[in-house]
Length: 412
Image 1 (cartoon, rainbow, N blue to C red):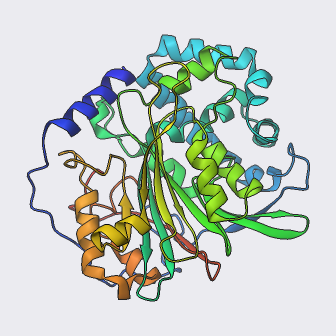
Image 2 (cartoon, helix red, strand yellow; image 1 turned 60 degrees about the horizontal axis):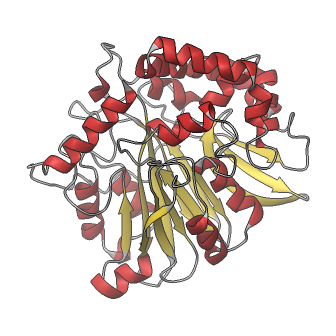
């Protein structure tokens, strides 16, 4: 069922332009948000900071973060399990989960660094089955819908911002009236994490409690990164093969796991981009990278798993420096579809976002301007969970829970 759904998305995207009149709905008044005013669903707009000490044992380093959030994580993983069961079919899902249950340490041992031990530690601290926490840690690859922007201001400084949209797409048609159940479950467990090593800060990240990978992070003075899911007909093929055929793809990694290794193993934009460009991933995705020097920005597109040994190779490298030199465009804006061709009719966040950035201009490229762009519909939509703003040069990092409560708020 999941394969058919994803294939239908690709056909829709390739078949026609949206035919809509593109407008920018930015009002310029969204930033700064009122920290003291809760979101309509009752969660706080402010995101709490926590610390993960990489010098602590992997099995316990997340315990103080996830234990107080165990109920929220359990609620969220329940929604994830129910969603996957509907997408894959109950029989296939139960068989896959049983396989994970029987071989969980074999699977976690194939994760990079000591991330697998972290997963097992999180399961113990929350009293949730290890297989469920493992599945949760690969779920972003399938259903993360996002907008990421890298912009260069008039002084040549680089800014990086993202919306993370996450939830059950209405187009899946699972006969469930509450399409935003996953979004609602995720929003309360959002957390900012300061990773430390050797007693010193290493990098900052906005994430979800119990998620060990990285999809939004910054190493002060070095580089920043965000990940957007790439929707295509082979989205889940590499992931399912990695689970079903252990040993065949051991050298391939989930994109969020590799993103975290970049922050633990590399200390600059150029080496991080090189490593990202040449490393194969389990499945497709857009990795948005930025640095601190003029022109340091790129979107690395990883391809889909079409055949064994050809999973997750780089199929496009979109460079900010090239965009500036060739088109005079000072920003890169990436959603969940390739930058070429028309935006899909069911989800055009790209063109309104580009129009807003053009109206913003280089002089307005800062936290104020970028937050206003991300707070404009449809980039702000019913699946939006948070916005993060990063200025690597100055180490400024801000993140806010987001919720679109306008009567005309789009589904995505």
